[in-house]
Length: 426
Image (cartoon, rainbow, N blue to C red; front, side):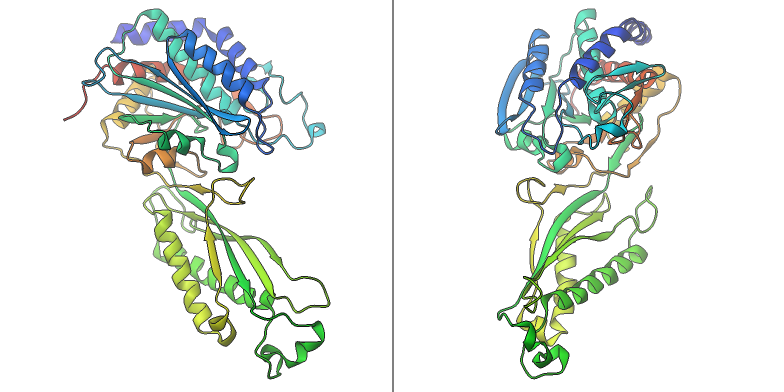
């Protein structure tokens, strides 16, 4: 095993130029999301790359112009040995004003110790390095007894969850590594869900009627939906403060579980009393919480707020939670992911890190969210582990350290070689 670690290390160092060339090729595909619907070309490229390594390929459209690619490298003894998913998303954050960049966003530039370009950190660097790790194992003749599955998915940046589409198609494994931005930490994550809270009046009134409405001193049972939404927002703030002092999770500062009133829409125009108001909220929750329970907590609390108001009792708020696309239905879900420190896969990944890089890995929690939560929610033990720093993801002049790409490649290759050649636990 020590010889394999040394051999992998030497091979990765010798393939630095190949790795950077592959990453540069991936960056050249402009896969911004939004607007999305632009990943077919890169996915065909990856389909070919995986096919050349002997993977069985499944490619299908999740949305028009956005396809998932899943490749499976069958193991020699699939029933007896561990299987692994390596997962990454090919969509990247929008560039914004290119004038702010000191380079062309979709043309990678190498300037030691970094490689620059949109997506190098989030997360085409992880994809390129993973492919090189697999390729070198193949070319070294390292046999894999368990199945290796590579998932190249779409839609992570806008909550379209290409990973969920893989699960719905039936793909699974004994363990999964999502090679998203983690600065080589082995991580779990909290969760996020968005929701719309809407107040709709049964009646519509002229602006001249305001003096007669119940909240302005008159006798007509009417109210402004915008003003009533203020009560709902105050109720959300109250619940947010309650969560901050009653909930906690190791690895997170207190108050990370927030309810953000992100967007408000209401009213017709100045000649009407507002008869409708909608609030778009973003809710962050801890790794040991499920979004369905979070929804119940919010609806119960806001239900009590509405019940205490004479008008809201008759015009209660309505809730629409989540969604499959921030582009199509203006909603998203990112399930949380607890980090199972005692799972054999997590221990083995940490051991591979330590033996390869001669230092202990950091096992902690991501302060952002990824598709990893969907894999965990499906019952697949999962971690986030990839190159790149969070402060560089989505940033102008996005970059990743070349040394970190190489180190990640070594660790992942070593982990695949060990995990896929370890017998399944009873």
